[in-house]
Image 1 (cartoon, rainbow, N blue to C red):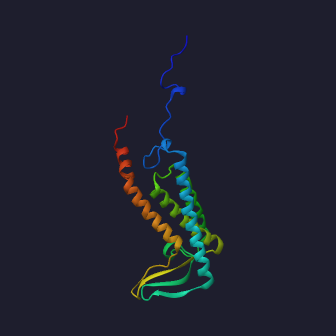
Image 2 (image 1 turned 180 degrees about the vertical axis):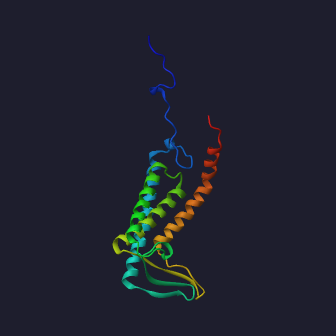
Amino acid sequence: MQKGQDNESPGKLETGRITDFVGEDKSEVSPDKYRGRLRLFLIVAVLAVIIDQLIKLWIDANRPQIELLPGFLDLRYTENSGAIFGLFHSHTQVFIGLGIAGVIVILVFLHYFPPANTLGVVSFALILGGAVGNLIDRIRLGYVIDFVSLHLRDLFRWPAFNVADTALTVGILVLIYYFYKSRVFGKAYERNDEPQD
C-alpha cells in the first residue's frame, strides 16, 4: 500500500521565504542585483579606507599645525591612544581586539541580513571602512592619527577626529535614517505584537 503524499512531506515542503532585516524577500533578489550591491559595498568601504590612510600618511609626514578657519577649524596632528574622544588611554591591545571583533560582527551581519537598498549598503560600507581605517592605525602605530580640530575660540573644543571617524559617524547616521525609512523597528514591534499560536 502506497502512502499518500501530503504537503508536509520533505519532497513537497515549500522553501521558506528568506528575508533581510527590513523584510525584503532575498529569494526574489536577482543575482545581478546582489552582485551590484556587493560591488557598491566594496567600492565605498575600500575608498573610505584608502582616503583615510592616504590623508593620515600626509598628516604624519608633515605634522601640520594650521588654522584653516581662525577660531573655529584647525588642522593639527594628534596621536590618540584612547577610544572615541580620547577616552581610556593606553589600552591599545583591547581596542585592536574590539576593532577586529566589530569588523567580524559587521561582515557576519551583512552575510545573513544584507541591506535591501543602496542607502543600507552605503551605511554599512562607511561603518566598515571607518572601523578598518582606525584599526589599521592601531595595529601599525599603536595609536590613531587625528587631525581635524573643531572649536569655538577658547570657549569650546571638540575632540580631534579623522576621516575614518567621519565615515563611521556618517555611516551610523545614514543607518539610523535607513532603519527609520524602512520602518524596521515598527515591523519588529508588529511581529512581537502578533498573537502566538
